[in-house]
Amino acid sequence: MTFQPVFNHKRPVLIAGPCSAETEEQVLAAARGLQQQGIDLFRAGIWKPRTRPGAFEGIGTQGLKWLKRVKLETGIPVTTEVANAQHVYDCLKFGIDVLWIGARTTVNPFSIQEIADALEGTDIPVLVKNPVNPDYKLWVGAFERLYKAGLRRVAAVHRGFSSYGDSKYRNIPRWQMAIDLMQEFPGLEVICDISHICGRRDILAETAQKAYDLNFDGLMVEVHPSPDQAWSDAAQQLTPDGFGDLIQSLVRRAVTNNDPDFLARMENCRTEIDDIDEEIITLIAQRMQLVREVGAIKKDKNVTVLQPERFRALREALKRRGEKNELSPEFIALFLEAIHQESISQQEQIINDNPVGQPAPSDLWIKD
Ligand code: PEP
Ligand code: MN
Image (tube, rainbow, N blue to C red):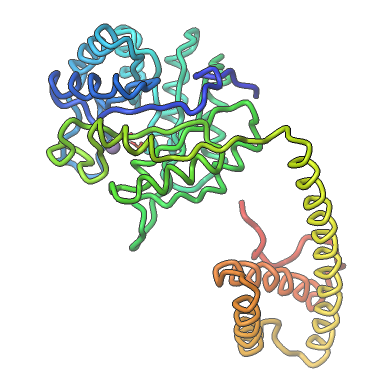
């Protein structure tokens, strides 16, 4: 799949506007405030997918007229969320410039297919938010369905993933999934929706800077003329001036630099890193060789593969070593878990008499 840019690879792309269109005055006030900030696309939700019934579920089709007016009066292109075929037809009728598919829709292949079918034969740009759950294939599947319907101007919006329990974020970013998408589809523009990731104003700036540093193409930010009075997502919206201040505060760093000294120093470090990575793999292979030997000894004496005491001791020792070497406890925990899972898999193969190299009987590594 090769997509065409929605924003012509302009960087940074700035998409802003209220969570929901509430009144014509509110929509226009937000748009006029944002006009001075030089945004590329104005957003406002007309049909709102709310987690529980009873909350404000959107102003409906009449909001499309307000968006049309925004475009007429400010010249800024407009976008809104579509969740079914009827929404698509209404938006096409009102000349909405760009459509976006929300996180609660991307999870459902039936809905995505319905939207793709309704869009067939048009070339309207579409932004696809990640699904609410961290399922990379489901996100890619949505792009595939749109692509098959002939749509080429498609971009991604990363808005984080829901989880159970307390977190600093409303939706945990799991940045790696957006990075994977950028790697797999190099021409695809990827926008970061910091508002739905954060869910609160005070961490928007640090999250936006992180998105810039991870080379996102731009930001989607919820902006409301009176954020605290917003009918949805009040805690995360900014005023137009607040949005301006946020953007001004961010540092844009270049993707690369052509200075020969910079390139030479980078090359030196990278060569050394490549060598170290090779050594790491060789050492891990040697470690696994010993692990298999231990597996054979355990088999001989009919002892279990998993040895909780040994694992606990190993974890403590590595944690201390990590602390001494400026490695975060989170990294050490993940690293050890990966090593330990592979060790268990390899020993299970020995204990169950599977030839090494055959699929492991353990499902520890099975991700699908
Ligand atoms: C929104 O952008 O207002 C919205 C509902 O977002 P999401 O689909 O990311 O929850
Ligand atoms: Mn919102």
